[in-house]
Amino acid sequence: MSEFRPGSDGNKFVPYEARSGGESIVFFTRDLSAEGLRKIYERVNGEIRGRVAVKLHTGEQNGPNIIPRDWVQSLLESSINNATIVETNTYYVGDRYTTEEHRETLQVNGWTFCPVDIMDEEGTAMLPIKGGKWFSQMSVGSHLKNYDSLVVLTHFKGHVQGGFGGSNKNIGIGCADGRIGKKMIHTRLGSDDMWSITEEEFMERMTESTKSVLGYFGEKLCYVNVMRNMSVSCDCEGVNAAPVVTPNVGIAASLDILAVDQACVDMIYAMTEEEHHDLIERMESRHGLRQLSYMKELGMGNDKYILIDIDNGDARITAKNAVKDLKPFQA
Image (cartoon, rainbow, N blue to C red; front, side, top):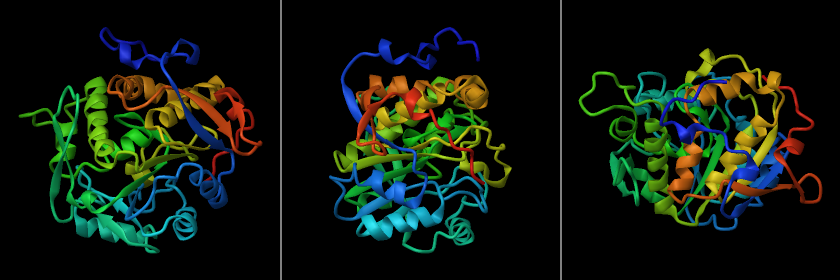
């Protein structure tokens, strides 16, 4: 495990019994399939209506670890009316840097069964942030405002800069536009290094970006984290992602963004040292746990939760029991 640096208290893993505040509901299934995804989504979709945006990471070309397209297609066709997958262009030069490159990548990766909206294709919009330390507003893809509800469908995994990528990263980076918003999050003003903001300041900036989106949609949000093929690398790295060495777990879903990300982190910590070593090293060395403590400071949710096992009659379980029967990773 990494050593915590002075001033990095927000990066500590806090055991459940040491947490304070209220509890939220997090649903859990071990069923890593299209049917499992549909069943758990239906537990959290009560406020999803109107024009629905589905935010997921569609991946670099031929990336091996993204949520399977057939799962997403099944979910949209069976359970979400009037749905559009939404993305934004990247800050780094790659397969999704321009809208034209991004659309080609969507074709290569098979995201052709429903509309896909690259939200910053026609410009940006500013969303206010209440209580932020770094920002009072965030620049997002202008098309975000075309939607009434947001389903945050996340491949939970590691991340080279954020430590881990859960629902917070999916929104905070994924809704910020590719030129202005992502620069606000990643780059210090006047710096020649586009990645000049690191560790806990980066976590805080990313989280404030997320809060701008939560403020816009209000209660018309839900969060689904798929814990499968969890490399220490983000799907941004595509075919260059590090090999998957962390076992598959299942799918978690909630109406509380902090609770669902915290539950997934807790499940990683509940694994054996051999199973979780690489992913925890990635989370801690990048100070990724600051995502959780800062969400709590900003009033974005609860880090305490009731974990409901929908596979076993809605029994209450612990993170340790959730990972009791781990599944091998899938290519």
